[in-house]
Length: 437
Image (cartoon, rainbow, N blue to C red):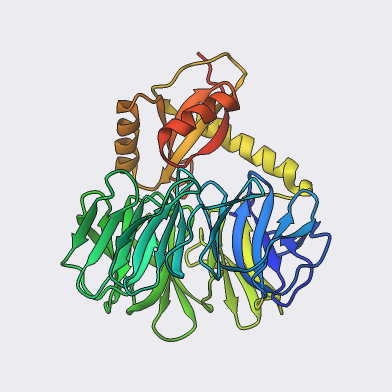
């Protein structure tokens, strides 16, 4: 459920940001110390820096500090922005100039974009990926020190992996895939026409697309082989995959309802009433669904068949909502106990070719992927091992946990981050008890 996640409410018209338990929708003791201005868009959370980011109605970037509750205006005149995989922000202004905000400090790019961006994606290695307006539309890759790299692309709906290493562009005649690093190769699926939406799994090993069919088509990102489709009651208008990779949420062409697909079983789990917007519906934690139902915010337990309604909160559904992997102080003891229990159970199942260290010490791993696909986790682990990294796979304790591909262990954060810089991909630090020899 959502025990390790907090739900934040940003009042659309301004006011104090409040934190809720995602399952029960009860308030925690945390709130911002000052009111925020009217909100245009939520950009996300940088958990390492303990900060929430959003744009106000005037295009000013502001932050909410999770430690102090303070609210601060950071940068004016923002027209577009995105949160990158490492927690840094990439922002564009009306003159198409780019600023990266990392560790709360703005870093300006050397060159502006050639035109207004229609999509921004953060990538690894401090890189921005941008799709600009045409004609001609362009795929731009850049960082603060280097000149822009530009590739002409056709117009169409676009999506990128969580790491920004691959961009998909859906056109009427084909689906195009662009690598954003290395040789910057391009591939095409000419058999896929008239795609309306495309998205990647959180691990990036699959992509999903919709056409005018009662299904979502699924492809392997590497081989481009088509996998069994996800059947739906009718053609979907749009869809999104939750951060764990377990659930896919789809919006029908007509009506206010949400189709819930369990990607572990490849089957439609349920249909619930609810609207669709940039922030909702969402899955908080492993299995708590949040939807807008008229003026209500409603939660469901996706572990039940059919999903069971847990709680409802009136007169707040019009506000913006964000789920983040952070817990307020009063929830820390329970969260630590739950995490330690899960870690001990998972650590006993750790299968690895990694170094053993002293008994009762704590070690650090780099988590580079979490996926529901055991074969893909094994393939990635073999690739990393071939590159000389000590690799582990942490199997799921519960089906929704997924297979975690780990590099390590390391005795210090500095040693772990030194290896992380050599990976060429995004990673998260994971602390685990050392295994007994």
